Image 1 (cartoon, rainbow, N blue to C red):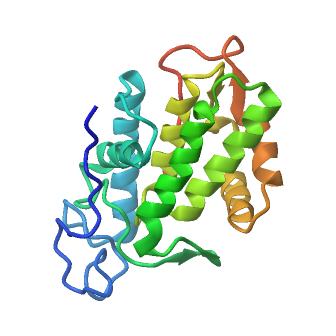
Image 2 (image 1 turned 45 degrees about the vertical axis):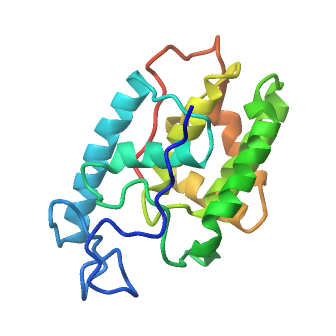
Length: 222
């Protein structure tokens, strides 16, 4: 299968300020297809539309190789209605809540290294529960640490791993844990501590025969 090129260097959206290419001048509001200049209003619209897209994706997952191109395609699908840069790699360096993420110039190379290792480990197939949770936490943390997109990383990443789990004997349900707890665990993981994340994933991960039925994979908004 021919891979879709990852869009990185060329903006396909208006960027009036090269230093802050994602926001309207004088604001912190993301440039969007609706021209909304109010942050909370944009968040509500983005959450609603991306969750509708997530439901559609779960009902009919798009095939992919579980690599960088696959994750970009998921992000583009989820946010195509709102963000003109959906699916494009982050162009600027960033930090959040004291966590520094991969420099923009290194995202592609570092992402490919992570996904190549995931492929080498057979996409976590054939593992027992303990080993699966350990590996799942490791790769989830590695992808989080990259922060591949300017925004929308959380939902795209969760959907990516939920689809990945379909190839194993486990299923993921992030609705079982509070968003605040997940964010705290990810913050700790970004600083090298996976214990909280693994503890949360004990709740997120279930065996195929437990509670899951097709179409019941769940996500939470960004």
